[in-house]
Length: 188
Image (tube, rainbow, N blue to C red; front, side, top):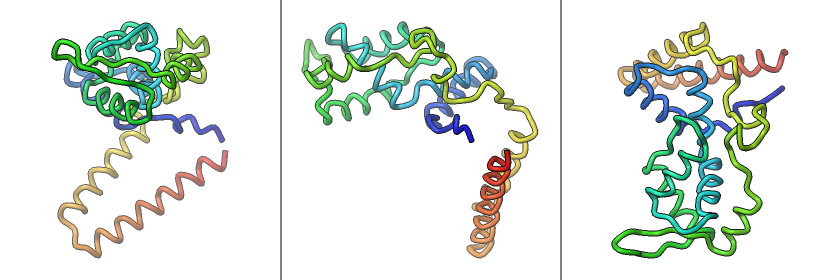
């Protein structure tokens, strides 16, 4: 069984989809794949690669990542800065103040990690089959997507208005459905 969803960063995916809907009135499967490609691990790699050429502010890092990935999926500052802090704690990045701006640079450990990092962009990596987190067949208006939406709506209603016993039974029913879905995948 091929687990092509294993590297999917749902939080990044949902945020990028939400922005696409808000800005453009919809999204395509290509935009779904682009959004999924900018998960936390991929973004950490892109930060390392952006800082490889020298120290940068957070804004300059965002611009460098956007230019290097050649996609419409631009990472959010709200995602970037916590990752920069985490990378600082891990000793990969050091920060300093320069004219009222925080500037980030690679440490020795960060430089070593950047040297071994590979770009997450399909064109840069050269192998498009392994880079994207979502499969090419995603049909956001298909039967499964519509049924999933109906299930989520009813689960939310039970969570809001159901008694404790009803919520427990609903959770058991959803767990049973999840197990049945796994069985469907395992049968292939």
